[in-house]
Image (cartoon, rainbow, N blue to C red):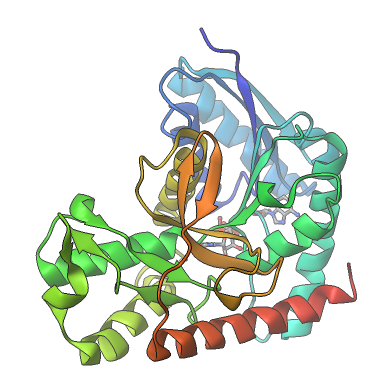
Amino acid sequence: RKKPVRVAVTGAAGQIGYALLFRIASGEMLGKDQPVILQLLEVPADGPQKALKGVMMELDDCAFPLLAGMQAHSDPAAAFRDADYALLVGSRPRGPGMERAELLAVNGAIFIAQGRALDAVASRDVKVLVVGNPANTNAYIAMKSAPGLPRKNFTAMLRLDHNRAVSQIAAKTGKAVADIEKLVVWGNHSPTMYADYRFATVHGESVARMIDDQEWNANVFLPTVGKRGAAIIEARGLSSAASAANAAIDHMRDWALGSNGKWVTMGVPSDGQYGIPGDTLFGFPVTCENGTYKIVEGLEIDAFSQERIRITLAELQGEQDGVKHLL
Ligand code: NAI
């Protein structure tokens, strides 16, 4: 029997938390032979702490064989102690009328504190996934606040955008989602992201050639993927939660257990690939093996793609410049 690993989850009483924790505890994230200890973080207020207790009662009631322990915390330095995995879901998303500077300042405070806590108490190999928006910039803040941890341990979630793009391509081509390979979403987790199927294949056949419709790419596909989050809020009255949790599971599972040669999209710090300045937390195509990811290099970037990448990079640099004074 394997030794349990410690999985910290923040925002644990929120909607994504409710769709996420049960799947982690059932073994969908780290494997059906890997026991887990959940270290759950919520804000100290009575309401969220009480709600968290309720979620933990339900986790108990599932009698998950792999759930080896469970803790509720309000202090990141306790929640992240010896954590092998940290899923940073809780944040302050932009509310109605909230200024950008205010949003960045509030999240700056959260992710500086959480980055420092990870630096101080987490496993040196901790794998960090930031889900809470603005995800790329929050991951950047945490990474910069944890100088004692390798930069490569910090990632942001673009997998939901990736999965959304795969699903749209499957619908357009009539092919099975499982057969679509080599898709990537470049850049920021925001409507500026660039979902790119130029390299995508189905059983080795080019998806771009199958679709052969640049009009559809620019005017239907990209806006559909880019505005999918808003479409779900409009339809459901709440932001995507089950699909976001699913993407978090996919991201961590592939990172930890390998992607079997498949490309997946992860937001990771650049080492200068594709002209993206070093440290920028950017959506790249990666493959995962033995618990590490590798950016797929050497892809050709045409003029259309270059322009899309420039736009999403400019937005991201604006965000990262906006928090520099806090770091
Ligand atoms: P929610 O509002 O239902 O839950 C968030 C929870 O986080 C709340 O319970 C809150 O008390 C907690 N929280 C806030 N600050 C915290 C802190 N400093 N430490 C610990 N807990 C804290 O929100 P939901 O729907 O679960 O979404 C969570 C975040 O995920 C939002 O920022 C949302 O914008 C983002 N998101 C990101 C996606 C992505 O693809 N990267 C997709 C969908 C949502």
